[in-house]
Image 1 (cartoon, rainbow, N blue to C red):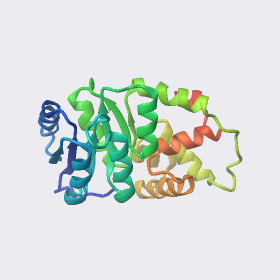
Image 2 (image 1 turned 180 degrees about the horizontal axis):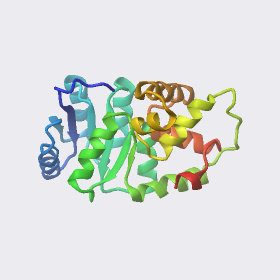
Image 3 (image 1 turned 90 degrees about the vertical axis):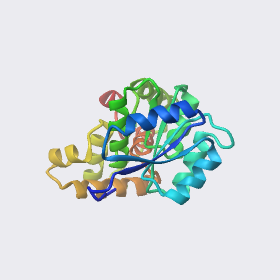
Image 4 (image 1 turned 135 degrees about the horizontal axis):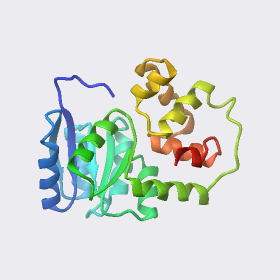
Length: 224
């Protein structure tokens, strides 16, 4: 997603606890490149504000009145797929993690992260990257192992270059880092990732990695 450098990243906060929203707003305000444009205290309000404010990033909690974070994420990605959703929650149980990521969330953080980590995560998901709290990575891996699908040939599905880009993305490299390693432009890397997402029917890096792991295209130990 490209952005005018003069315009900050527009963020919407969705959490039913006013104190959490206030603290998160204060943390994000430390970065002049981030602007909190709205706050929602429940799921329906979050969905409505997404349509009226058109933020770049939505920070969403899981447990909210009206609609939970999973349903909010699903509706946001369904109507505005260009908006990045970043979960910020206390819940690290497998069903919550997997449901949020499969709904299209680009990242999943727990509320024990430091302010600088949250700021980096907002920039990362806005740039099209994925962010997972360290304790969540193993949850995702365990889910993939338990739900593993038989390996399939990918030669006629993803190109060799697309697989190279996907593998590096799965290892946590940014678009710029992938571009440097493969001697490509960042825009070309973004195009390859877009092709991967379209072919796999997903909307984020995390979903693409999960889909590729299930098909046996990526090695779990290589990515751990």
